[in-house]
Length: 91
Length: 271
Image 1 (tube, chains in turn yellow, cyan):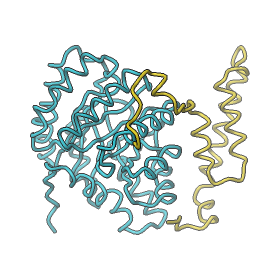
Image 2 (spheres, rainbow over the protein chains, first blue to last red; image 1 turned 180 degrees about the vertical axis):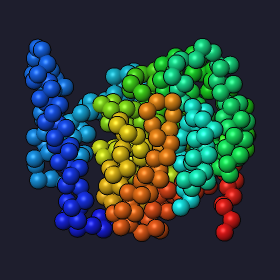
Image 3 (cartoon, chains in turn purple, green; image 1 turned 90 degrees about the horizontal axis):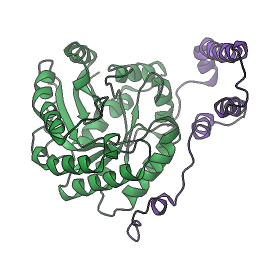
Image 4 (cartoon, rainbow over the protein chains, first blue to last red; image 1 turned 90 degrees about the vertical axis):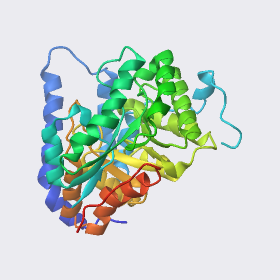
């Protein structure tokens, strides 16, 4: 199924909201700069910067990519690492 | 529009909230057992909690014409205590015949630990042995993707599990696809900050379609909004979606899923 609105209608509806969200991000980053000390090497901030770069891609799965950026890795061998019995054959 | 909230923790909410939900169109809800905000000291605390869920809450809901259903388990946070968890799991069958019990839930993972996984597998075994439906909590924030994949591994690794009788909850953009593709139901939780907004939930419905997809408020004792499902209804309407699509997500789908429970006796509002 699809979105019943055109891209132009979405932009009309969400432009001010988008503008406000970009402004909030800018103000948050400015606030970090104004605080004493530096967090430039903090891994959380590095993820935020990587997320901002993801936003600029022409790709309709930005939200999913951002989610994965902020996620721990999945290891298919977790069951063995925990010493749990393997899943039943064919499971 | 009449709607059903398939995941809300009413023991943490006031009677005024029941009244507000009724005014907003809520006709039924289901309340999974969850963490109280502190770790309980004994299995007897859970016995009292299960009595609250099966005896007291249905009466409180009924005052406002809302039908109350519930799910029983020891939640993932307290599952770190394996011996306590086993005591609680052993007690659960005493309550499975209560008229509002739909199944085992919300089981799941929290920090994706070995103990949580052991107790999750033991809950699955309990559900299978008693032919119960299952409602699953997936972890928060950075733990969600890893935990959801681990949960799917455990579910898909047990051929006794009937996938159409399992709801995997709190899905977001990065977890909804594997849940639906594996044949499970998926629930989106509408939270102010940490889960889905109504706008993003509407996006997910548009991208994946309404089949086996539900939305809930998961209203509890923390920051949450018990009337979040009506917020999603409004968002879908504002985008121009049909009433039949909206009704499918917020009413027909929960009914279809819940009807697979032996004890789901639902009376639609007349007219």
